[in-house]
Amino acid sequence: MMDEQMMTKEGMLPKGCMLYNGKYRVESYLASGGFGNTYMATDTVFNEKVVVKELYVRGMCGREPDHLNISISLTENKETFTALQRRFKREATILRKLIHPHIVRVLDLFDENGTSYYVMDLVDGESLSQRMKRTGKPMTEQEVMPLLRQVLDALEAVHAASIWHLDLKPANIMLDRKGNALLIDFGASKQLRSQDGNSLSLSSALAYTPGFASPEQMEQSLERFGAWTDLYSLGATLYNLLTTHQPPSPSEIVEDAHEALRLPSSVSKQMGDLVLWLMKPNRKERPQSVADVKKFLREKPVQPSLHRPVQPSQPRPIQSPPVSPQPHKSEADDGDTVMKGGKNTQEPYRQTHVSQETRDVNKKQMLYWLTALAVVCIVIGALVTGMQQCSGVQQAITPTTATVTRSGDNLILTVGDVTYTMVHVEGGTFTMGATSEQGGDADDDEKPTHSVTLSSYYMGETEVTQDLWQAVMGSNPSHFKGDSFPVEQVSWEDCQTFVDRLNSLTGQQFHLPTEAQWEYAARGGTKSRGYKYIGCNDIGSGAWYGFNNSSKTHPVKTKQPNELGLYDMPGNVSEWCSDWYGSYSSGPQTNPTGASSGSDRVIRGGSWRNIARICRSSIRDNGTPSHRSSNLGLRLSL
Image 1: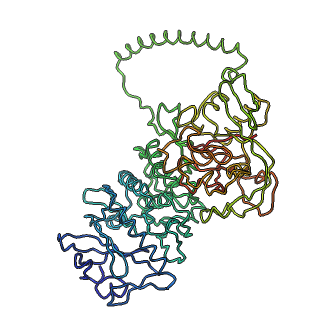
Image 2: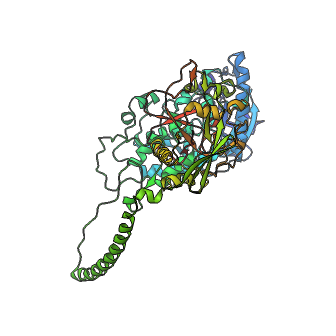
Image 3: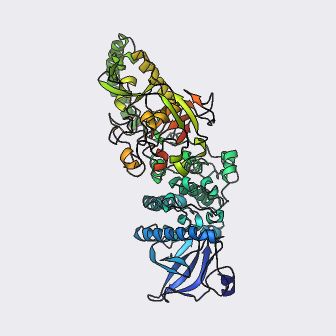
């Protein structure tokens, strides 16, 4: 606690200061962040202790000793501060409506002293940072897990209200007397977004907490903020709680993630995988929503082994998870959920004493089952003999009929009883990359813009559906099942196998579209109307995306098409392209096929998991050729 002179000198309100016509009396200074000062106060009407948050932007605001009114440092910052003030009040209003057991409650909102204030409940307890300071040791995984789930619930509610916290750290997670976690201090969330009609030009207005801030926060790229920004901070928070160490910087993680994010050997591999995934420097490789993290925890429970060797002095390096971890069931694990590339953590078989009587009973049972097994073997043998009379297993599941016929300007692919339309795309010249309608949402890898000329080609009217994939491949790997749903959980390599089999059946040369073909078709080709998003300016009408998805994919052709009549290019599932992922060049190109080599293949189009800006026509993504995800499929080109 500061004395009165120190509080005034440093721009804080003095002890005993009365606010809101005497309703609140400041008792003590609590803390400051980049966007505000926090005080403990007394509600003089009900004689209760509360917390008062004051909008006070570090580097922009000032307060002279013995003066309560704040001043703005530069005239050009006044407009920015006014916009911040509008957002502060708007978000206080939204937070007041978020009646959630793990979010501190907002009680009041008012303007005074040239700024704004909101009043919150005072939590009877301590922050997680105070707890670690008090105990002098890290938290165990068993202690962290229930708190993690509560924080995830709180973040999910906050994000659903289109708010990002932007300052998630142990100091902003309170523990009440019952051990429940409450999310506090949304001060940083007042940073502007595009809907404010303004942008921050003052670097100090974009304050953040080193170690807990994502790269996009440190770079002050507001247009790149999203749920993934808070999730990076959540990963850093987990790292801090489990080690008491300051989280490493993104540059350290890029240089050597395994070394930078070493956790104690007592921490499970699952938790290590989660921390590494959350703290991916590339925001596109992190979970895109709280739902992604919950899915990981649901399908790959974080449960420390009871038989882990005790080696507290030798941290165990985290093993890298897939770019977007997609837990699956392993048939060999008898129903145990395992991560791709992970280890079976079942306890080994334990031999126990068996009585003679039990052994006699077991012998009788064994004779019974051996007899039954002999019968089963005879039946299986007959089936195998029948199968051998066929020309092969693959022929038994692969359709014998596949045709491509013309229908007007388009082509109709028929495999068995499944049809798939290929839309004619007239060739032309277009500007590829971060064109003007993309605005500030464009990423660096969308630049520079460059002229591209393409010959005419055909593009799938929809994403490849599960019934078409089943007809060609004889199996369906998708997580969300449905014949008319887009196929997903397919790698780039899987897509090549699919295309090769399809070409053998039809005698045609189907392929994944090149990145240039994909973007040209997404923009509407010669019929383009210059939309920011693919086929529309109202993304909800054209895409199943992060705010209307019901946490799953949907049947194709249930949203409006783009100018060429192509469906679901934004949203539903992202789509593999044929190119290696690489940087753009500025010179004009004709029928480009991307980089000559690389480690990742291009992925285009947003998915059911993504926010609107990821559903733009020029957005780029990438993944290793073996990567699979429930939000990643394909579209055919010819």
